Amino acid sequence: MTKSERKTFVYFNMLIAVEGFIYLYYKYFKLLSTEYGDRPHELTSKLQHLHILLVPGLLVLFGYVLKNHVLGKLKLNNSLKKVSGITLLCVFGLMTISGYILQFGFDLDKTKMIGLLHIVISIFWVVMLMWHIRLRN
Image (cartoon, rainbow, N blue to C red; front, side):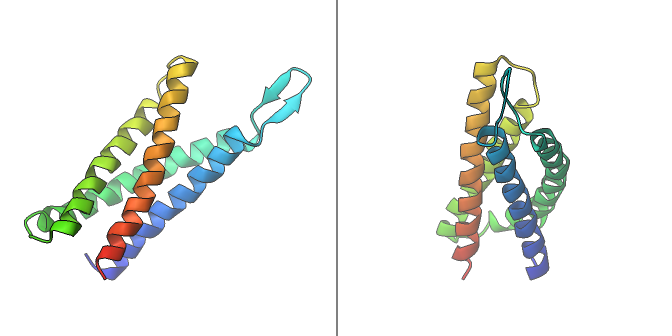
């Protein structure tokens, strides 16, 4: 993987992560009080739509990284990098599946649990990705 490809992948991940955390903040911590009770902030739905529009780009980039980086590295014997890489593959799959399932209209309790799972997995993804990149040095 070239340096520019790695930077593109990492920067796109960081863009989506920052946007996702801003969405999280507005959804759970920026509720507006009205005479009828709390309601979401006006930016919440716009941030959610932006997140949903950006993520397919990440999926395409991940497919490119999978083809040009991951499949070749799986044959090497660098065990520490291989463990973090395989962990990243699993975490990315879980993050993608949980994000996809969130799009379905489940009852409120299931949606909250899946949303919490998506948040935790996404944070773990970002941390593991940064750690994996640091291992290359």
